[in-house]
Length: 287
Ligand SMILES: [Fe+2]
Image (cartoon, rainbow, N blue to C red; front, side):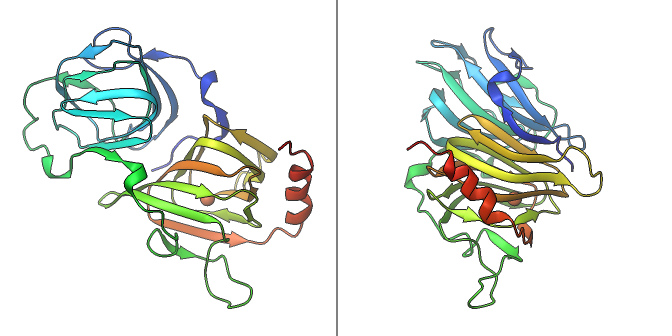
């Protein structure tokens, strides 16, 4: 289950490499994390204007989120903010991009693309979600559905909660294997004052805004402790189980797409110095 750890990757620093499969030339990708157990991973795919490719299917499940530009498969034109889930073996396409495209792709197994007019035998076509316009999905309180368990307590009521100012849209939540993909928004000035740690993989791609993370560390290894991490648009975090992270805040608000290899299970620990840390970030703010 473990993904590789990234504590604030500037995605543009990763090399552009060919995307594996029977694709026309010029489609490229930047691998941003790999899952050592499944052979899957996360990548940003880059497609030039005017690119086209015949129909086919992929050897892995794909969650596709358009960061910029357009991507058409079949009759579906995805634009920035659109999401598709394509199960392994489900044929899609032909594929094209008019203006070019940057797309975030979460894939669940080693990635290959096979040209075919038909689905692979046994492909689960029922689960195919062709083009979800994510702005049509209502924001929800994460405590309503997404957060199954948290040890973050409301000081007044003593009940589990999340800090005020967090909203979510769940895009996909499957049970076998358990995986949860969501959009998460944190309002400007929202502070999560402690650290949390998860028994599952947690990966976040920063779509827009800014984020401050006081500490990132692995208590088992005691090594590679990061302090005062600041990230902005097109940065990425990838945490295998057991990585503590927090306190967290944002000046201008932050918009994420998140991947978890389980429902959210956050174990929360107080950080006594959270106020000094977050206010030192606000002190540097330029509005
Ligand atoms: Fe977390």
